[in-house]
Amino acid sequence: MSRLLKLAAAAALSLCFVPASYAQDAAPQTTVEQGQVYPDSLGSEDTHAYTLELPADYFVVGSVDQISVDVVVTVLDGEGEEVRTFDSPARGPEMFQLTTEKAGVYRFEVSPFEEETGLYEFELRLVEPGATTPEGKVDQLMSAYSGEETPGAVAAIVRDGEVEFARAYGMANLTHGIPMTVDTRNNIGSTSKQFTAFAILLLAQQGELTLDDDIRIHIEELPDLGETVTIRNLLTHTSGYREFLNALSVSGRRLDEGDFIAREEIIALVQNQPELQNSPGAEWNYNNTAFALLTVVASHTAISGTLPRLNYPTSADMLLIVCYFLATAVTVVSIAVNRMKVGGSAERAERIDRRARWMLPAVAAVVLGVSVLVLWI
Image 1 (cartoon, rainbow, N blue to C red):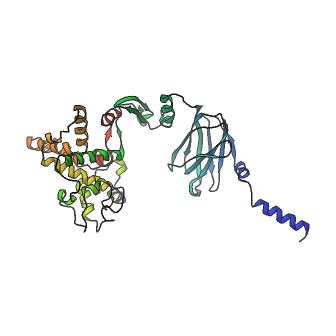
Image 2 (cartoon, rainbow, N blue to C red):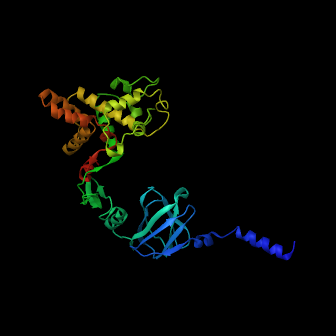
């Protein structure tokens, strides 16, 4: 082989081993300023880099508005070490935040998720020294939820039953410009399940049921699918029943818009299930169907008893809050409906009964404020 050919081969081989630092530097870079918006577009194999020199112990919050492309944001420190990767929603703001551990030129790399293409806007919203007080640290952690154009949140810290810190951030309603307050009621999602579970445990403590009862003892309409499904299975997401939210979504129901779901629909879905998806207790599968059925058990069992049986041996405040959540879990409401029907207020009873038969609150949609939730803690 001639000397010229050997040199050409060596050059070609060297191109196959480009150092990572060189490849990193080869990505398009933009030195950024806080508050400045940088619009751009991504190709399927692009990586855009935004840089900013930062001291140690600085707090940074930024966002990439995913206008028409789902992005992944990767943060690297001054030595090229990856600090964090952010990849949550597919559209809207991809928020990122961090506190720098050492000084250096930090890189914020924006790349497409699964080779998508489209438009985005990059912005560093906040760059400031890291907070030194507990209150300041919470404010910084919640800064992504602050501002007049951001859906908000409420943060509270409770110690030994006392509220040490409570503060609201951002907006409760963007359309009408309503700010979040400490007393704003929020949908707490599937955290609601703990109150439904508490109602069942309370009834078990009073001897109205046992956790090892066959669910068909309390809901006779449920089919025999060959194995015993217990209340304990429902509480622990091991029942084997299929997920009703998936079934209703496929059928076109808009659960995200609050479409009404009656308890009869849940029972009908279970009746149409040909077999259990697993033996009860054998597998864990997060399951809203189970908690929808538990609300039926709670309401049926409580109706057969009397309201005083819901008393719980604890403080007056706890009794009040327990009754509040039992009402949310359809128990006290169902008793009230029956009493109203007897008393002749049929129209009002029908309205409340329809609300009581709506399954989502006790499953995943309790609405309350921090001041009420603190009482539960």
